[in-house]
Amino acid sequence: MKRQDYYYRRAKREGYRSRASYKLKYIDEKFYIFKKGMNVLDLGASPGGWSQVARELTYGGNVLSVDLKPVRLEGVKFIKGDVFRDETVDRIREKMRELDIEKFDVILSDMSPKISGVREVDHMQSMELARRAFQISRDLLREGGSIVIKLFYGQEINNLKRELDPYFDFCKLYTPPASREGSREVYLVCKRFKGSSS
Image (cartoon, rainbow, N blue to C red):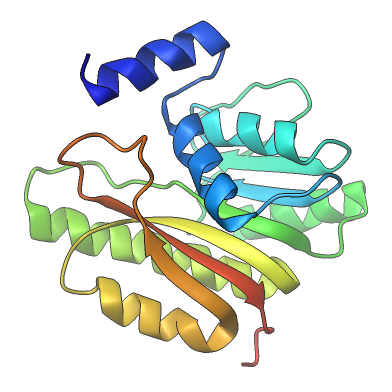
């Protein structure tokens, strides 16, 4: 059985929204991202696979999902909006006040561009999404917090890692076993945020 078929069928069997759930599970098993009671922001959350895992692993905390497409999950709060619009970030802040969240412990971004099939175009668009996720994280992530951001391989990937390195004690590129064979996806995992002025 091909690897993608295995995780697709496993997700259906175990009640996850997508095979991406297992990518985040592998990331957590390797890097210890989540703890009970943590507050998590999930950018580009649809269809909700990462939010499901975050909810499970942070029992007693809050998971806030943001996407242009609706994400309806029990125990997960949702904001419909474009992360590039300031009004969406304002709504995130409003929800944080409502939930008594000063800063998030973890910020996730599984955002993906519309795939054009042109590798360099897809790569550069994924870099734009990643930089926006980090821009939001600089404002909304607590000191000591973690981020996980999806990227597509290309010439800018190491430049982005170098941009983020000074803000964290630990940054590593990682491809989880649940990624499709031949996929150009890679995840940037950064831990122990030093603060926005680093």
